[in-house]
Length: 77
Image 1 (cartoon, helix red, strand yellow):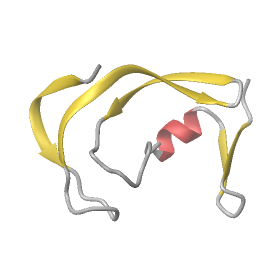
Image 2: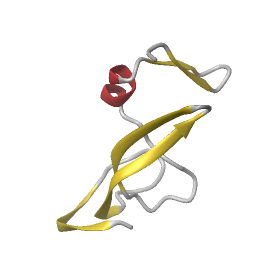
Image 3: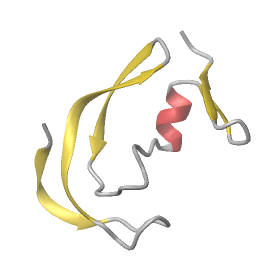
């Protein structure tokens, strides 16, 4: 269940013009194949995007992104 932010803000993206951000999800579970990752997510009201993972998150979890194959591989256990 999303939590309300104490203050809303707008995010600039290439997908859609500055959506209003008002909530976040604490302890969301992301499942990649047989691996689970728990993280906090900011809710963006997009229909074209499921989730956006930042470069810092991907680096922290040892992710290898192959854009041509549209795959993500994790090098850490």
